[in-house]
Length: 153
Image 1: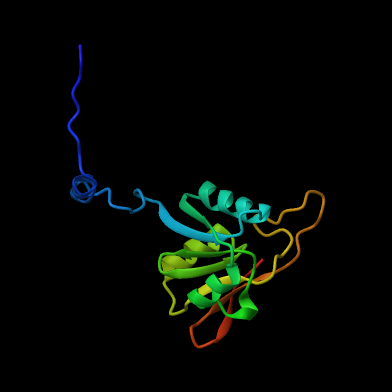
Image 2: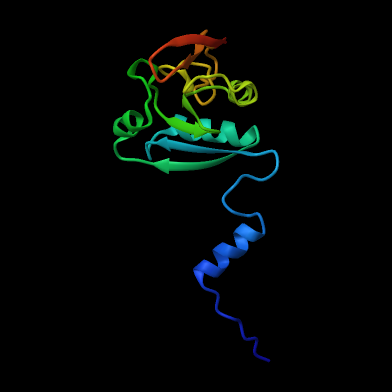
C-alpha cells in the first residue's frame, strides 16, 4: 500500500504555524534566551545549561567576533563578560543567575540590561569544585551608561 503525501510550501507551513500559535515563541512558562557566545567556551555552555534547568528556552548562537556583537547590542565595555544574551528585550551579560533574570523580567526596570562583569568564581557556569565562591554583584546598566547594583551574591 502506498501513501501519498501532499507537498507543502514553506509559506503554507509558516502560515499554519502562525495560525496554530506556534510562531517562534516560547511555550507557556518559558522565556526565549538568545545567547551569543564563542563556539569553544565551556563555561558559556554551562551557563546555557543553567538557564535551561531554570525553565528558559535557549537559542545559542556561536559567533566569530563576539566583541563586535557586544558593541552592536550596546553592552558597555565595563560590563563585558564571555557571553551575551537577549531575554525579554533586555541584555544579560555574563554569568548572571537565572533568579536575577527572572526578577528582571518580573520587575521590568527602565534599564538596558544586567551584567555579572568578568567571570566571578561561583557564579552559574563558573563553579569550581572545592573552591569557595567569590562574592560578586550583578549590575543593572542603562543605554546612557548609568549603572547601579541590581543584586549581590
